[in-house]
Image (cartoon, rainbow, N blue to C red):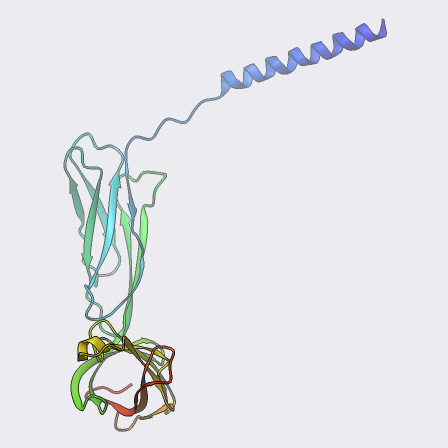
Length: 250
């Protein structure tokens, strides 16, 4: 019957397909498991550092086979970074953090490519590139009419035309301002804690009122700053504070 011929045909095709699949399985070879080698990692590889920050980056070297003591070897491309040529592991030690000091001048950038030269684990990174910028530092004196005092301070250029005075009035309260031509602007920001002056007004904020000015020839910023309570027009009034650059000028 025609129906029987169709059924036999389908069964024949199924058997052929099954045999083909079996043949494919028999011919397939699994890749050998990788049980050796090392790889590199880091929490981050791009940095912006203040000159007062630790001038180091951190590299983690991990290895797959931890049974015996061993060594991992490295090479790098920039002598401003002090990368060890060899890192030793004790038996059972799987990873090691390496602190890499660098010597980069204020206001400059440098990069270093670190490469494993010993056996690399194929599923991890064998190369890392560290990119470090150390922000420009200027020496200055802050002359405060508000507090009738003056003090020396670094001023950091954290971006083109954007500056930061660390802990200007009080530790923990950095002041940020911008210079655009001769115009100086302090956005509204936390500046000091009234409790440190024996008062109970909370955190005091400052804001330009109005914008200040920059005398580039003499390196002097004059900035009228309104010292006020958070979210309020009440405060301690406006005083012209000055930043006098004592060496190099922006």
